[in-house]
Image (tube, rainbow, N blue to C red; front, side, top):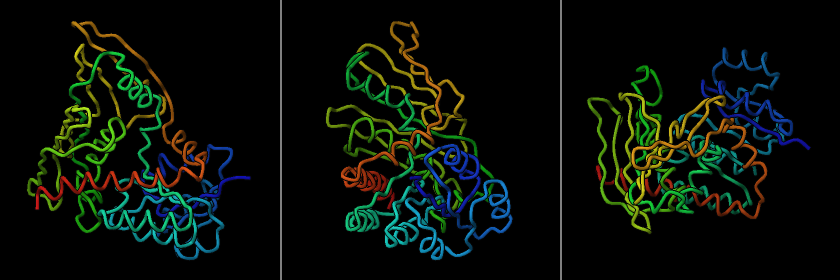
Length: 316
């Protein structure tokens, strides 16, 4: 039996990465999508033969959906998640999933009530590169980790991009910054806050920032993110023996050879190199997840937004 998927809004990212990845999976059926953009609706209907709904409530009620993929603006995530859970539908949602800890707790509570999953779509965590990195760190393959630098930033986008809209939940912290936080939590668990700063630079939303944390094992974690910067998408792990370098740690095309390198005494050695569609691998993980593990995975929402709020409250 195929897993039936509904799509809530279908912007550029969804059209470029999500729909093709889902359409390529043999155990998936795309049964419906909701958008208010009629031109987009026409293109998707013709290309993929997916049923178009101009009313979200109608799609959720009629399409016999197992999972929805939500790629609406951040500010709409929470009401869309609640609607899906109330219709007893599992949720995969773009980052940042919710706006605050109160929303996260309500989502986790409602999901538990119906034994449903709410998964925040950090696709890079399912690439073999990230899995290998965690193993290298945990096994102390190249020494004991002392410091970690996680960087994700890129040049400014067009002014009309929703990431510059305060009303729609934009800002660099909830976008590029969310990746750096997710990586830290994924590698070291929930970490203790030390310091942070976010900067607006005449914009209505924050456009870059930094944060410093330390793990339970006193690994110092330095996070940097932003818009309007030269492209940087990497992690560096500084051990007592050398440096582990992770290039293209977050965003990468499926044909890109994503490497992990180790530098010791000036000698650069390639530890591993992988090519993969991390979107497909994420979906394989989510659809294969046993229901008894939903509660633990759902709690990741709380860890993520708690960390974000520590940075936000510093600025209040």
